[in-house]
Image (cartoon, rainbow, N blue to C red; front, side, top):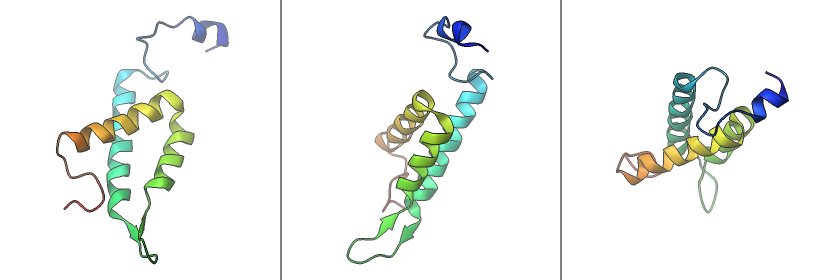
Amino acid sequence: MNHSAQASLPITAPFSAYGMHADAILVATGVLLLTVSAKVQIPLWPVPMTMQTYVILVIGMAYGTRLGVTTVLGYLLAGAIGLPVFAGTP
């Protein structure tokens, strides 16, 4: 897709060239990776570190700005509704 056609896409267009289903799968995969990375702890002293910082950077590089932000907002929404996605939850 050339730049002139990409600039003329409506704001409701899917993030990727593959459509909304692929975007939904990517966001769900990103939320799952963030959840797993929250549970993995590296025992440093005095505060243990999780792998979320690394996963956030990888998601940002792989997904781009809009899809990466959507993924992180989906992760925060999952935690806000009570799912155990954050570090320290069962």
